[in-house]
Length: 493
Image (cartoon, helix red, strand yellow):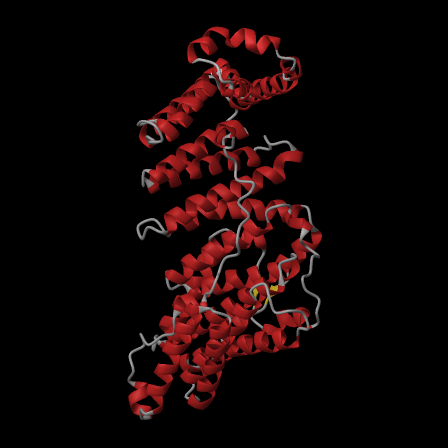
């Protein structure tokens, strides 16, 4: 390969000679002598040396990258796996199964050589194998591999086997691979609840680590959690983004929020709205004090409002007061037993809201009013901002108008509902948000139908006539920067 590269580099130097008006046979016989007597030959050595140095340097860099930090036997297997992903089944025809087997052999060789299972090199091989599983559509196996990496990190962190200076970076990697595993598991109806069990110990560990290093963060978890929209007062007073607790989370604050939102989504899909509400409310409080943007915080608050609305609907569907009390008690017990209380010391006005002596209907109305108050607060807060409405703020505003319109319709105020929904529709069209636009149009059609119905007919409507849930939870989780995802050096050159 090296000689071929040098030969190719000589082409431009020899090519002008072929333009001489010399018979072909003479040219073949005298090429060396012609080149050697031309004065330009000496001047051409510099670019030749330069080209040769570049070729040698590139080859050396390739050898260094593919062998650096890996034992030679492991590096050779990794290179074979890489080549199989490019030309395994012929020129430019990847063979992922062959590549997969080579990476598995590399991992087995790493085990034989007793490489550190928490090292970037070892976990890098595991991540490549997990990605191969995904390419082969073996998603449970991919999730299991990601989970294995995370559990290795978790055990090492718990036993203080990770140096103090590296703990922050390892926690970030741990949360990311567990998020990969849990995301894959949450797409399968048979395993999506198991994703919560997988996430929980890692979330608790990371939260404890952050709380241990920050008294301010400890205070956030010790103070009573409120379902009041007053938590947005700092936003209205132009004190956002508040970075008071941003450094307390190290480099993994986005991963913490993403994990909590994953748990919120799973609880919501399971119909456990109260548990989802408590997790999401605390998540919003974290975001409000940890340097998240105004738009991200407003969207998170809108999701809290949506959960309050869903809990109101849930209570309406239960006509037995005792059944509701037991169910809500179970939600609380499940929440307290899942490890959050011990790690977070969460306190809330849960009992104050749920255990009031009132009928099921009035409980539902309380949650509905709280939901409307949240949506109203978001709209008023955004109206008060003098900054440009960018960074998810338009989405939060339209979503809140939409949610408030839905609530007005459920209360029978169809005129106000139409006004709010039409405003949301116009703003969605102006912002080119097609999904929000379609949701608004669908809800407006429902309201127009309700206007022509009697109260008795409205009362008998099926409860399935709910708003578009995925719109009410627009962009539930924040974007995660994937730039630090550990990868093998071989796939980077």
